Structure formats: C-alpha cells, structure tokens
Image (tube, rainbow, N blue to C red; front, side):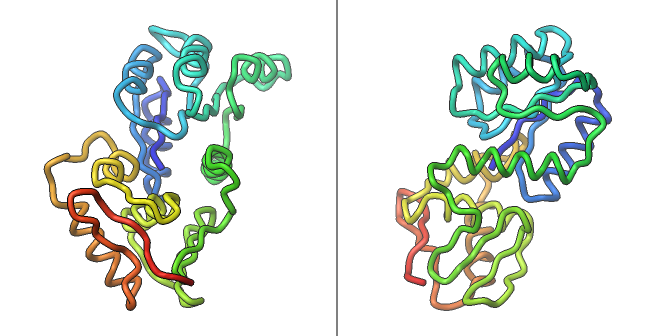
Length: 221
C-alpha cells in the first residue's frame, strides 16, 4: 500500500511518515496543497492523509479535486478543529474519514488499513493463499499456522502479491505500491526482496516469476 501524507507541520508530517513506514506502508510526504495535487497526478496512491488547513491550495480544494479526478483514492482529513460542523463539512467534501488533532498514530494506521479494505471489493480482513495468511492490522504472516518473520519491505511486497489474488503483478506495480518516491526504478531490489521472501516462506515455493511480466502467488492452501 502507498500513502501520501499532506501536512504543513513538517515535524508532524515526518512523524506520520516514519510511523507508516514502520507499519510496512510506503509513504511519501508533501507540505502544501499544490504539491499534493502534483504528486497524485504522478503516483498511484491508495490513501491520502490530508491536513485541512494547507498553504498554496487549501485542503478543502485539494479534497474536491481528488474526489473529482481520482475517485479510487481514499482520503482521511486531519484538522485541529473538533467541532461537529467542521467534521460534517470535511466529510461533505468527499473525504472518507476525518481525524481531529491530536491523535494517536495506531488509530491513524488502523483507519488507513480500514480504508484500504474498503477499496478492495469484498476483501477479507486476513488474506490467505497457498497456506500463507497475512493479517495487515496485526502485521503478522503465518504459513500453515507457523509464524513467518518478515522485514517491513518483504511484508509490503507479499501484501501486494496476495491482493492480486493469483494475478500477475509487474515489477513496476510492486515498486509503485511497496516503495516510496525515493526508490530507484533501475535497482534490482525487487528481485532481491522476492528471492528473500521465497526463502522465508519456505517450500514448496508460493511465488512464481513470470518471465517478462512479473510475479504471482501460486499453489493451494
């Protein structure tokens, strides 16, 4: 999953980005509404964490443009205002969720995960394939009931593959969803991560390389 954090308080934005990355969520960060609109036009985001009171382009206007031009993106609006009418206004602009400052980071992560599930039609809370179970909320992976220890990036890549439901996922898509904007598109890090992930999941192998196309989950549970 890939998230864009739009927050003009730099310290808070960096803290959110760091926390999301700890939770195996790729996160980019900008500090004004104009930059947010530009980033969304370039990258494929699942969720935008959007501060309402932004410079250059106000958060309300950013929300309107995202809803109109990128309907698949889910939006969580952040604001220091706690009044009910402020929340109603934010949701009325098309935001999917609304969180007042100050907030707890675990709650923000839980809300982001919930919105991601909403974006996936009939997606179960725990993904299962070939004996592998992935619980995004607990950030736990098991195979045939045995815990599998993964790095944050390995977890992210596995989640992208499992969400595809057996379909082939290109290296470009994996890079887009599991890495942030600082990733080098010419690096072999995806191949290395897939190789390590195969080893950690054990035999028989559950990730297949489709030459010239990408990767997919295989096997039966």
